[in-house]
Image (cartoon, rainbow, N blue to C red):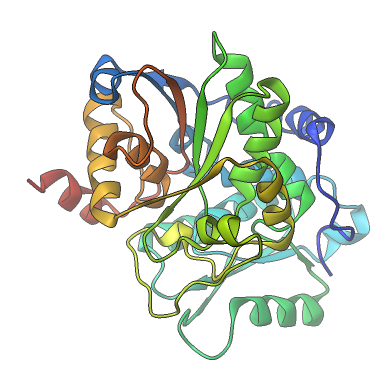
Length: 329
């Protein structure tokens, strides 16, 4: 049982409807600017601060938009999902607000903070080995069948994409002039596909880019090839939020049509972006949430004499790891 049956690409009207559902529930996150960061890139750099969203990441948007549309019959048996942590928390909190049970399948090596927070929102957490023989999709499908719970996908769902697209809608209303380019983190592609729909509707000439960590550049490679590419199972990254094995089917269809390309950054560049976000914006950003900022600061894309908007997508980082990042020379 999935949260939506047809795999139809959402449009700007779906995103506007999602914004209506989220009003009074989601935080209207600020668009931040720092003279230091502007000087560093030689242009104007605007940062969409999703670590300040409910649950500490953008994922609450899509989760609440999806679950709030379920029928009373569907809500009765609750929801189930699988996630490395941010979608987990988004679904758990949305379910908590709507008074229904949630089961969340999470990798056993997910950051402890994400597991703890998901349980804190009242969800039942089931841990699995992400490198084992049984996939999270298989576990989620089994729980859905056994309990009659609705499966809320992390990204490949039109309602999820529409919810995440409210980020782009907000950006379009917050900027004082059309941006030249918009960069967003990309795992399965829900955030960047939804954002692209809204941005390209408001600013047809703006270029939108997906940003991924090295070794997990499946969307960048897929955009070049024109078909969905998989990651190398041996790849590793500190960006735990951006590790799906391949782009979503629905998200990639949107991204292939709307994105200008994909950018890739190293773990070291993500760490530096985390430091700069904290030093210049007083913003706590997790590794996967920092990759778009990393692309701008590292020169992975030219920002000189341009207005660039980057989405910092989440801030759920374990304190000890964050302290290690800040202390590094």
